[in-house]
Length: 226
Image (cartoon, rainbow, N blue to C red; front, side):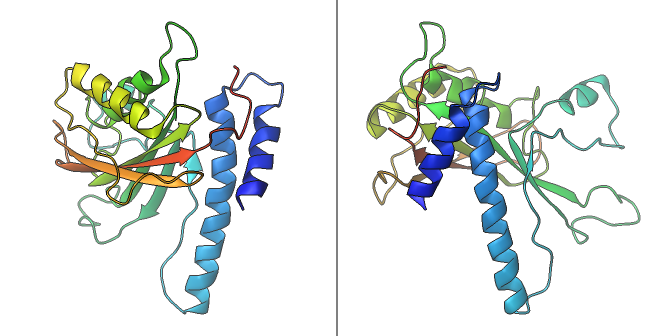
C-alpha cells in the first residue's frame, strides 16, 4: 500500500498546475479516504449493521446557520477546512424546533511539517497559526458544535522530536491558551502515522474540544520544491 501511495503521491505532486503541494497531497489522501470508506461500507453491509457510512467532502464551507445570520456568522461560513466528514444525526436536537441542527461535521485541517520553505514561510509555525488556531478562534470556529476534530500533518523532513519542539514553541508564542502536544506514548512511527492529541478550551461550543493529530511520515516520498 505504501509503495502504491508513494507512486501516486509523486505523480500528483509533479503535475504542472498551480495547486500547492499541500493541496496535491490532500488530493491523494482524499482518494484513500474514499477507498477506506467503501471498504467500511462493505464490512457494515456484510455484517448487516444499519446506518449510513458517508464519504468525506474536500474543500467545502460550513452549512449556513438559519438561527444566526449575523455578519460575523455569515463570514465564518466562508471558511473552508480541508475536509469535512458529515452525517445526519436525527437524535441530536429536537427535529421540530431545530430541524437544521442534525447536520453534523467532523472537520479536518491539513498542513505540511518540516523545514521552512523560505525565510518567511515556516511550516511548523503555520501548523499552529493557520491550523490548530482555527479550532479555537471565533474567526474560523472549525468544529463548532462538535466535541472533536483533527489535524493531519504531512511530515516532509526533519526529525519527529525537532518538529514537535518547533510546533510547541509556536503554540507557546500564540495568544490563545493552547495545551502543548506530547510525543506519542507508543513512540514515533517511521513510514507510518503517529497519533497525538490535546484538549482545547474554546469561547464557543463545544468546549473542551478534543483535537486529534495524525502525523504522516512522507519523508522521501516526493519532490518538496514548490
